[in-house]
Amino acid sequence: MELLQLQYFCEAAERESFSATAKRYMVPPSAVSQSMKRLETELSAQLFHRSANRVRLSERGRAFYHKVKQALALLEDAQKELSDDGSGGSIRLSIFINRRIVMQTVEKFSRLYPAVDIVTKYTASPDREHFDLIVTDIVPGAGDYIREELIEEEILLAVHRDHPLAQSDGITAKELSQAPFICTNKGSSLYRITQEICGSLGFSPRIVICSDDPHYIRKCVELGLGVALIPSGSWQGQFSEKVVLKKVGDHRRATYAYRNRQKYFPKCAARFLEMLRAEFAREQGME
Image 1: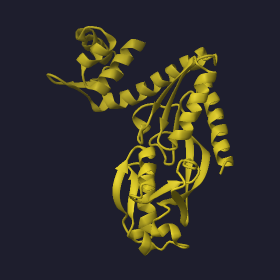
Image 2: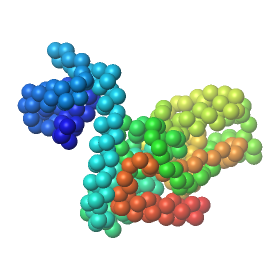
Image 3: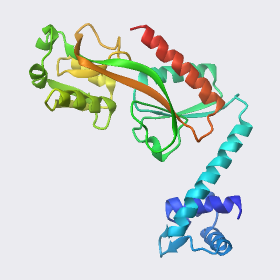
Image 4: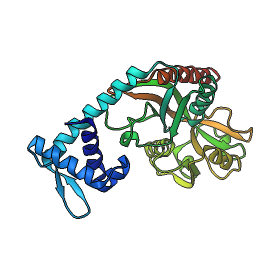
């Protein structure tokens, strides 16, 4: 077995196509097909079921794939660790919540370490690709993760100062159930939290505006178009004097940084995490 041969195998298994694998490695499709036949002969096992336009892993092929995938990942990590002198590299970030604070850190880090490339994605399901750090309030999916809490914040109700709820000393479930809600999109952290808090009070929120843009949500609250449940720490100082923040029960959200225990953690990523801790601590100290 050769390393390139095993790379062909994993790519073909995932793409279910020898042609697509050939394009990925810029070789003729026949080269991939013949390589897989030699691998099957060497292992005395059929790894793929073949049809006209598609290949699929056999049962034995699936078992072999999982082991080979792990082995290739270990080799890749070993190569990264060997070549990592801390002077450059790249960091892959999945940012599900607290984007403002994380991106502040990215900006500061990039000024200090311009040779480090930072790739950011806003995703709730990072289990399909590898990230060095995942910033979220939920377990990110399959994997063995090291979890570190970055901040815990109270969830408050943001309401226009002229709204009746702004004058209420103790907001009741009945009063809140009659209010229109503004929220981030379905699948987001604040959408889930809004549903959970309202559900605990015995009603489903009447959501009138959804957006993936926190700035737009804050603007809609300032215009008096509805109320919003928001994290007190990461959204502090983001509203104008037109908005009042009210307590509704005792609800909190913790933000965590996750990193995969089974993957090599680059030196530049460790340096970024240290700066991220400091940025969250600074923000929390401003409350």
